[in-house]
Length: 296
Ligand code: HEM
Image (cartoon, protein in one colour):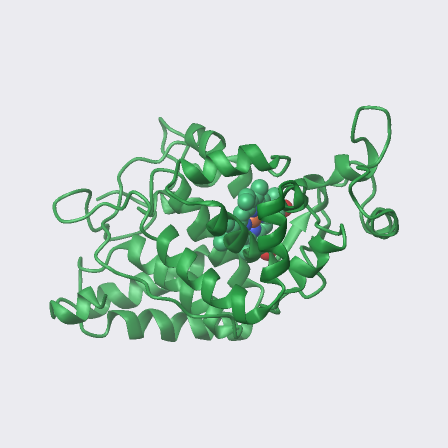
């Protein structure tokens, strides 16, 4: 904790990130969701090493250009924080730490919980689009798949249910649940596990095959509340992976418990700290990038 301050390498590093993130998120609160998701997508693919921020090159397509990452926003927030840090303490603060701190600070800014972010991560130098689909859970995942993908990253079912609560903020494109509305088994039917009235409401927002429209993942776009879990309990989980949390007795119990903010918020915080430690690079591993989009 407080690596840059304790080692006196960059005493104000964390304060600089917080100030910039707050500025951006106050102006556009929907950025919080994207920065949170960016951290998740970074950590699950090659560990929390900022590989998500690297640009594609002439010879390789980077993670950020893989399909699930095309809807990420907020790269400019990370770049602004990095520029301020390079001015204050050149070549010292990793992009991986900036992203991890930014996820925390952005959720804090919209009155979500705060959590510990240990620092001292270093930046990776590899980023391949092909690793993304191999490591990120797909939106149509069932519980067994979700559980095993999270287990592969050292995260248990408690973490899975808590971190899925990230969907209490932000949007989904219609495409991610189109099949649930229009063609679930290939016979033009809706997903029977989705509340029929809610499905009908969603069909008014999303026409079949709509690739452009976005809808909130729960009823409050930027409210870090527990409505996400209340929605799931009412069979109104938007994605199949959200609804899948009702599949087992244990996970259903955890969803039910998570409708209480006094359970959800501290558990989300603990699980975020844990997620932020996935396969991190430290000490002599990796590098400290001068610009987050490029290896040195
Ligand atoms: C459990 C497996 C998960 C699956 C299958 C999944 C899938 C998705 C999908 C399909 C979207 C919609 C993206 C779009 O259409 O633009 C989304 C959005 C989002 N996800 Fe997840 N996700 C999962 C877990 C997580 C976790 C662990 C977090 C963070 C802790 C998270 C945070 C978010 C946020 C905040 C958004 C909204 C992004 C925005 O508004 O820009 N998700 N997710």
